[in-house]
Image 1 (tube, rainbow, N blue to C red):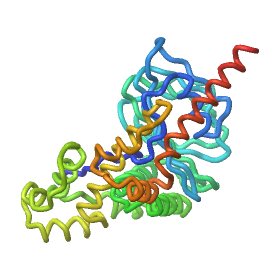
Image 2 (image 1 turned 60 degrees about the vertical axis):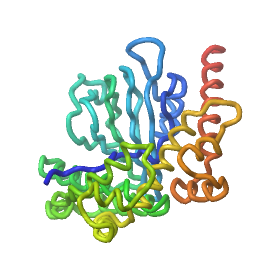
Image 3 (image 1 turned 180 degrees about the vertical axis):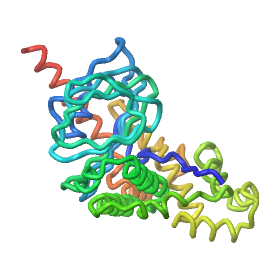
Image 4 (image 1 turned 45 degrees about the horizontal axis):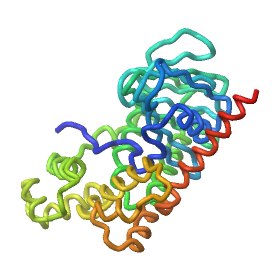
Amino acid sequence: MRKTSPKPDLDAYLRLNNASFEEWITALRVLSGCDDIKCRPHSGGGSIGSLSALDSARGRVISLKASKGIDVSGFRSTESVLLLPREGVPEIAIRGGLWRPLDRLLVLVPQDRFELRLAPGTKVMILRPDVGALGDWIAQSSDQCLTVLEAIIDCYLERLPFVRGDEQARQLTNRFFDTLATPWTPRKAAVCSERNLDRRLQRVVEKIMQDPAWEFDLKELASYAGVSERNLYYLMKRETGITPYRFYQRARLTRVRERLVDCQCEVPHISWYAADEGFSHLGRFAAMYREHFGELPSETVQWRRNLLRRSVASAEELVET
């Protein structure tokens, strides 16, 4: 049985998509806390990429995806950070050194100011504890240690798509960073490395996520998976912690969020986007949206609007200087 995970990333916490250069650099500064970050596109014009972020009391997880080539410099942190390539092979230069492939997990300490070179389609995840939590792992600095860390991160990312809502997502993230704060041992990875999504559930997940036009039908879904309705319900509940319908609902809400993040119109048609995904009652939709993402649909739109204002103001300051 192969180890798989449905969109094992921060799709539900998308903050910016199809971003312009000004938006990209402004959002990256806001999300990373590094005001002196600089970006240099490899070619002019067009969208730079997307950004997602999930905050918790213990730390922040950021996902960067480039839609065109770009160099990003000026990264720094008061705490150690983890860099994990998710798609493609990005490059990294540390302390002004030579560029080298970032082809596996890398642990960086605060003094390791670094630059990233992202080719089109490259995705990198930045995991930053809020409190010094990686000291024991840094001291080990071995292949075995990195393998354990990668397994723990994979386990966290595999569970994230199946959370019941925003509160559980943040609790899961807190537990993840708490795990990093405890002394390392190879045994930590044992459960995660053996955890596989049942192939029948994998079919269900792919059906729900890859067929936006499909309307929920438990009988059809069970037939597609090759099990009875009752078995599918309890199998998914046992393996993921949520029911098939709950996962279907979260997938629809995530698709609405993607459209809201992309919305740059003066009056966002939130009710239209909701109706397109089968949410007919705007009040109930808004309540479910906040439960899943920790903010109202209007706040998702407002975040990008605020970012646009900030990026315009920054550009004007550069022109004046």
